[in-house]
Length: 158
Image (cartoon, rainbow, N blue to C red):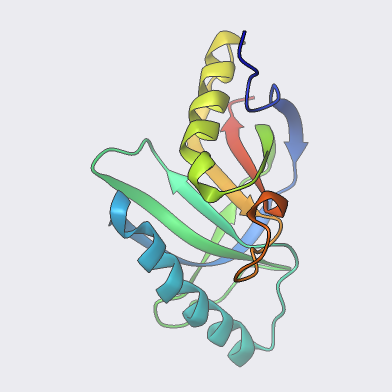
């Protein structure tokens, strides 16, 4: 019998979250390049606005992935963000979400999403079409990947 790599998700009620984002339709292999480009743009825009992040950054998926993904690279802020060039404001609605904590390499995230979506279906819950991953820790170059923590969430209809 093999051990399940992820715990069963938990359902929690999450508050509304204001975000500064760079949002694009991106091919799956190009996701890392989008993150590498977006974070400097977002942090520069936050600096110009005199704002600080209020929580760890996220990647927010809108709809189901196909050949491309509608993806927001996002940094949470305290209030709605005023657009600044490519960096725009977005709000992640509050409500119920199924979440699971992933420890280790980002290579596990696709399997974690499959696990959460499968669990949601077996529980008779309905996803809204918005899913996200929040990067709770940042892996240090040459650091211990096993200490990396990412929270994967799927928003649910009430």
